[in-house]
Image 1: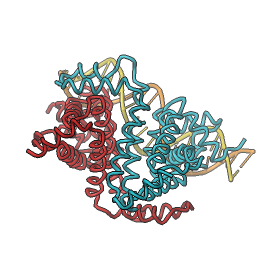
Image 2: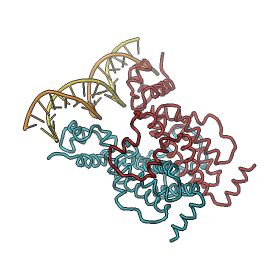
Image 3: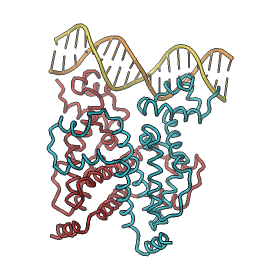
Image 4: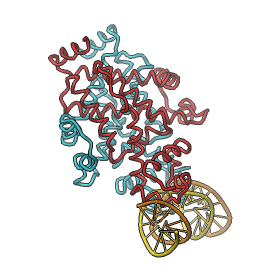
Length: 218
Length: 218
DNA sequence: ACCTGAACACCGTTCAAGT
DNA sequence: ACCTGAACACCGTTCAAGT
């Protein structure tokens, strides 16, 4: 049975779940698809290109449904939550997307969508572009950390690591770190996303802001 | 001449500048230090541990001077700028720090400092911790991208990549991407950092905020 | 204690040859 | 066109043996 590009990407995502990003090798992927490792280079010019295709497939998923016509703040919240769900759906999903070198069609569409939302909110395209990236850094950073923590050995929390090296630390830091490790990641994610949204709101010129509020009200 | 741990870290940072993170191998580092690759395992149990030590050294640099007693917004701006300077000082510096597995003393001190600033601004320790991480995601994401762009082949801009795949894109997106690639990264960095700061300010309870304003005024 | 030399168990990638 | 088999040029890591 001959392989198609899509088969390779699907197999790679399956292997990703089983082995993690560090365990994803061309030889193992070949074996999982019943083929020699080298044969994969008929379908992708490099492992990097395959990883780009995997990232684009993950991004595709959270673009499937159109965004509802709600105020821009809610649209960003929805986009953020969908991105999080899509990235958490595969082991190391966030790391795969963060490592994207050449963006695919879905990655570009996602960027386009983010910029359009921020422009409709009242930002100039330039600032919308800058903040779309900033938003992406937050989303990816947060989820990379979530997925890393999920795979730590049981006793290896921040407390035991701090104890090993002797660094004095404020009681506030202790409380902060305890909260980071004990609070539902979804809540932390939403909180930070909201801070971001309020920061964006602070950059919208008042004239535009009025228009936005009316949009939200109808 | 026998090697010390610090010599290995210094040599590794030098080799990082010459070869980049992907070109940094234990064998090459050994050769640069006049030693076999395997000999490095007398000083570090793994390459990962060496990379952690490199990351901590980078972090150490921007903690050298104490923060001036200015309002919390300015303290965060100063911290962000110092972090950016320190990370840009070495090739792939941001990727090295982002890949940190076990934080060292400086990394912990930097976290402690961030949390303290945010608490002094009026946040509860838990939220201060969450936002300290969010802040770090932004800083690292931005600088990783800066350092990646700096090494792209000349003709390989977003425009030529988009042309290769046929994805329709809004005129706003075009303007946004042009702005991202043509604007001074320092300006973009400061803008996003400020958005973040204003978002944080929006989360501070009014009672606390008054105190903060007075602090800033004196 | 620190380093050498050599090995082990892998990698990504290429390519003549087969079907 | 797609795949095999085998190679090339590397990796991180380990370890007996030297000094």
